[in-house]
Length: 434
Image (cartoon, rainbow, N blue to C red; front, side):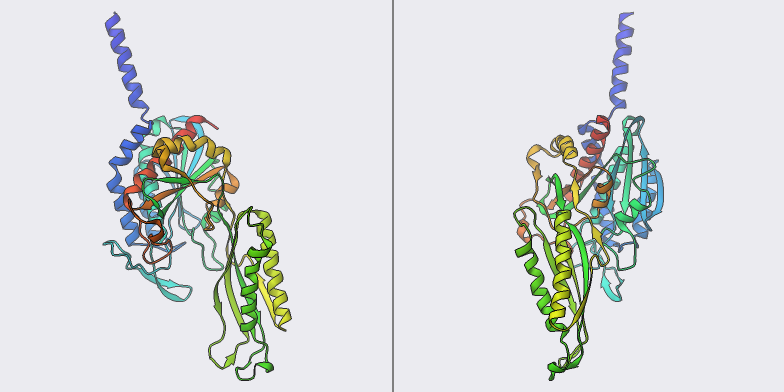
């Protein structure tokens, strides 16, 4: 009787091990096995980019892939967003994983065979369209995560919610979308999300690495519109009018004193930038109006409040001193909060990242003045936003093509690390319980 019992015990142990394929080694094996698929998805998305709230082709590809895995799918969230729900075989927390889908109005200049040839009309102008920030990579990586985790469904201790989000890069004035709209439409409810994880690939960070930062990781952003109104006159007789161009020049210079003279720069950085100025159409006519567009980046609510107040004060008082008038709209069309990684959650999950990538490949990063609307999820639930290396091995970070430019380039060999990281974050968090 002993031998049959022993055989039965051995068989049970074998079945148990097969029934629990959630080790990091197993995740790595399954991720590596679909690397070619992930790269193919990315190259297809790259060749067929779509602007925010127009990601119709991309979202349909994603939805069909999730459905093919047996994942419950909801289409049309915040216009073109896709949400997938994977219920594990065991009870536990709900983890959300997010990827953004939109491209940018940038004409591609890279020599890759899958370069975008797409063009469209944006804000009244004919523009090229390009995945110049890596969102094509994010979609492909999260599709890979969905494939790996769905194959482990029976042994997941909880539920995974896959969020494929449109319009992260912002929208023209008057349109709604992005993470803020997805939150408003209940993406973090039914079932209620306990933690959210996301990633962003970086062209200047070495492939094979992950970087992170507890607390404020990326800046809050407010865009602004400044309209300066003077009185038009002949360019030869400026004394007969009120020059809004000279007034605007004074405003631009004075705005730079906010960071240099009003901000406690040893505590937090900030940026005040004017990125566009439009006024006049002829060399000998002083125009009536000048319109400026700009951005404010901050890392604390107090700094944000102070800078906004100072911007309004400088603009209106400088205009008044020049006998002009000025109006400030801030935010004008977009406001993103600080991308704030919950420090307790970071401490809890850091060992997972180190075990996934190797401790030497997990890097504490500096705060960045770029912004991310992942912050809207993190306002509601604890979250971590990590950064994935996309710079080819041996490449110079200083010479890496910047994000949002025609030459933006990503090394695809780092994609599976992103898949492994998101899979392991979800699995380990769920296994720990709330």
